[in-house]
Length: 214
Length: 263
Image (cartoon, rainbow over all chains, first blue to last red; front, top):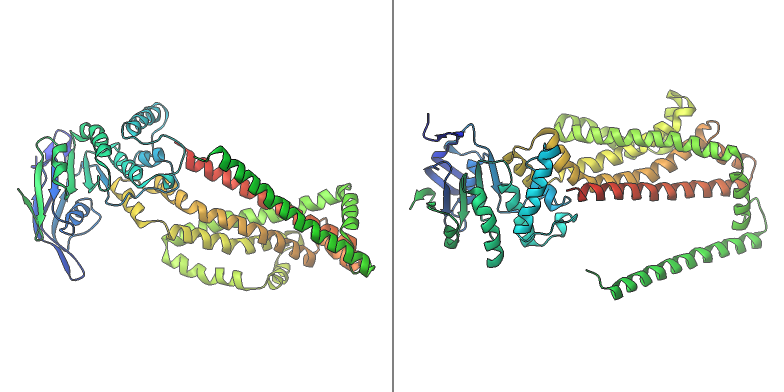
C-alpha cells in the first residue's frame, strides 16, 4: 500500500521535482510536495507565486516541463477555479448539478432537495433565472456549491472567497466546512483569515518556485 | 423588479410604437391605392383593395391551399434537412480539421453561387418536383453550418477544462455545455435560413414549374399578364414568410426558455 492509500483507495496527490514555466517566466522550480489524503491543506503565497499553477498541475490541466505529478487512481476531483466557469445560459441549480449529470428518479429528487437546501443556506435565490442574471457574488457561490456538491473526494479551491463580503463568507463556510471535512482539501489563498475555516490544516507556502510546509 | 408605474410606461410605449407602425403601413397602402388609380392601368399596377379582393377569391379555392401546402411542405423538408445536416456537419468539422478544411470550399461555393445557377444545374439532376427541396437545402445549409460551427468554436475553453476536472465527458458534455453555448447561434441561424430558404424555394418553383405550387401560379400570372394574381400570390408569400418566422421564433424562444429554466 502506498503512502497515499486509504480505506477509500489510492488518494495520492503529490509532485516531485516539478518545473513549470510560461514563456520566459519560471513559476515552479523543482517543487516537491505530498498532500496527505483526507486532510485540509491551505496553500498560501502572494499573487503570482504559482498557487494556481500548482492546482492546475495537480488537476491534470497542465503538464510539468520536468518532474512528475502523481494522482492516485481513486482520486475523484472537484475544483473551484479562480474564475466562476459557469454555463451562462443555465440556471444556478443546473450549473451546480452539472458534475452529476446521470442522476434520475429518487436520486435526482434527493439531490435537488439537498441542492435547494445548500442554496438557501448560502443565501442564493432558487429560481428559473439563468446565471448570467446573477450578481458576481452569487455566481461565485454557485461555483463553490458545484464543487462541494460534486461526488469528489479531493477538492481544489483557488481563491474561492475572492470578492465576497464577510457575512456571506461566514454563511458559505458554515455550510461548506462540514461538507468538505472528510475529503482532501487544497485551499489556495493569500488571506490568512481563511486558516480559521479548517481544523488543524496543513499549511503550505508557494515561494520562489518551491512548495514548502510551514 | 419593475414598479407598476414603470410597467404602465412600458405598455404605453409599446402601444405608441404599434400605432406609429400601423400608421406608416396605412400611409403606404393609401399611397399605393392612389398611385394605382392615378396610373389607371391594371396591367402595370393594381391597388391594394383589388389585390385583397383577388386574394379573398383565391383563398376560397382548394387549389390555393393545395399550392401553399405543397410549396411549404417541399421547402420545409429541404430546410429541415439543412438544419440537421448543417448541425451534424458543424459538429464533425469542430472535431476534425480535415473535415473542416474539406467542407470549407463546399460551403463557400454554396454561399457564393447565385440561386439561378443552382436552380438550372439541379434541374438537370432531379425532377422539378424536388427542385425546391434541394434549393431550400442549399440555401440554408451553409448558414446553419457556419453559425453552429462558430458557436461550438466560441464555447469557453474554461468550461471544457471544468468538464475535464469533473469528468463530465461525451454526450453529457455535449448536452450540458455545448448545447447551452451553441443555442443562441443555432436560433439566429434557423431564423435567418428560414426566410432565405422560403424565398429561394419559391424562386426555384418559378423556374422549375412543378404542378400545384406557388411558383407555378406566379409564372402563370406573368404569362397571362394577370397582375392582380401576381400581387395576390406575392402577398401570400410574404404572409407565409412572416407567419413562419414568427412561429419559429416563438417555438425556439420557448424551447430555449425551457432549456435554460430547467432545475
